[in-house]
Length: 157
Image (cartoon, rainbow, N blue to C red; front, side, top):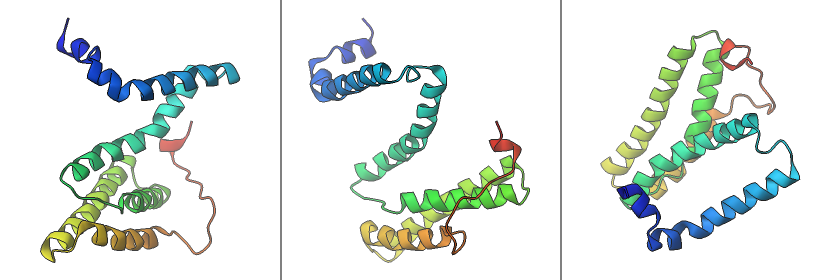
């Protein structure tokens, strides 16, 4: 029996995650009975695509929490990056260039948080609450809320 399978059958693992796994399985069974489309490939791919952003953020946040810090500006940074991507794509920029710039914007926002916290010895909670408001304000595309349509081949079906 390999080490992964041995860990899976470990009683400690079952005690820690068994309830969550049982709830997930119960919900999947329930939803598959409520909707015949639930277990179809398209729906599963859609759910995975929607969860992927949160999973990536949670993976990064795990390291922040492991060192005893917290970053409350993550959602605002994601919104800012989304707006930057939308503006760049709608202005005709290529997808690769746009994605690289968006990654740089996100990295610079995180670097800014870290620099302010380290240089001025301000707790990350305070810094990230402040920058959350700043990034959220910068991310506001216009004073009129609503939907914005992107006409780019990157998002066409």
